[in-house]
Image (cartoon, rainbow, N blue to C red; front, side, top):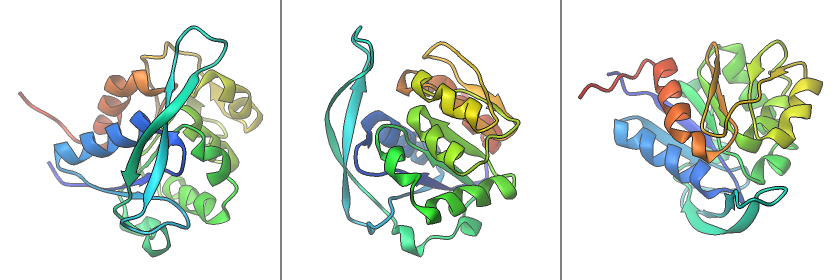
Length: 193
């Protein structure tokens, strides 16, 4: 397996599992993963939030762990990476307002590189205008944004993922097994037992 260099975009109040699990799983497999947040440097911490599904009309939110970034956003260039992962949670609400984030995301689509986004991470994709003509899923409350941005929102079970070319999306962290497995396939990573 060829090691891939993967950029993980996250930020304050990103969903805890949607940041930590892909970061750790992709490293465990042998990929080089750099976690970044605008206006923060390697060694800085972000605060995360745990979103849970407890029967309310929307998800609940609890404090998550501190997550230490291992790269500096201002030092990275999309051309140096093979793929992009975008965490969900509340961070995408403000990250999508950053023009440098949007330009970075557009690079991965223009160069036809693998992109994995989960939950509210899809808000960054809609703001970057890269979902037009694509089929994808997201947290259901983000579905109208996908449609307004010209994408086709696919409603799936919270445990499922949707793949359209090199774009892999999921509605929330319960889909991690399918979402990450599908992303590994798009990356060309195979695991043999």
